Length: 304
Image (cartoon, rainbow, N blue to C red):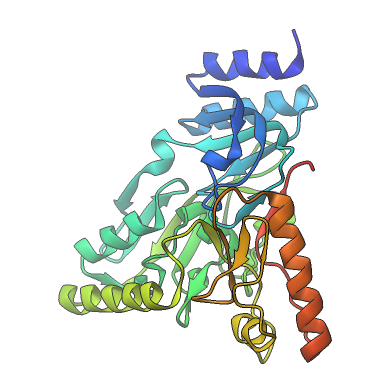
């Protein structure tokens, strides 16, 4: 039995859903990406540990998938195992009057609505970010002056050695689009958010305001991975790209959005190669015209 078949057998025995040769285009907001050798959806911590341990013993690479909203998968797909979180990882509950305990697979939108239901404020900035809670915690997602580091009290993560550990405060090493989990290989399993009592109507109005701003400025009607580039110090990536006359520029099915130049959209049938070529063209043009280096924010994974 091949290693990938053995891992599939073990995953199914642990109550996981397992699918071979699953197109990653079905699991990324870009709608781009070749097949994963094996996609496993784990329902609890015990199964997650078992699948990760077995993948290690079988020398199979593995990665954890969130909502796929900041991910570009190459056209050759992903070798080894892609792990998605389900079951208990989707749960959201109140830990105290102002604290929310969230599984990593809970949608950020769902957590925002949960906070609004219990009139807790502080998370409104995240309304409309198409991420899982775990992905948002992992990359310190943010918008409109807010970011996850402002509300995350602690995070439970599975470390590469198979142990669970809680991280809090300075241990999270939060920075701009950065957390300690990018360094230590930890898998975010859950997070405790600390919010403040608020007014439901004010919270709802704030969420609607942020949504309308996104709707007006961002190409929400086309597949994308959000902002492609990190914000350069002292600049805005979208403004620099527009300044260089690149709105509408395209390679194959990938194009710089006419609505927001910081976004690359899939106009239909775009490949990862199309997007990567367009990214390089943008970086070259902005460097030549402005002297600013644009750093890619989107994670690019897989084989050519």
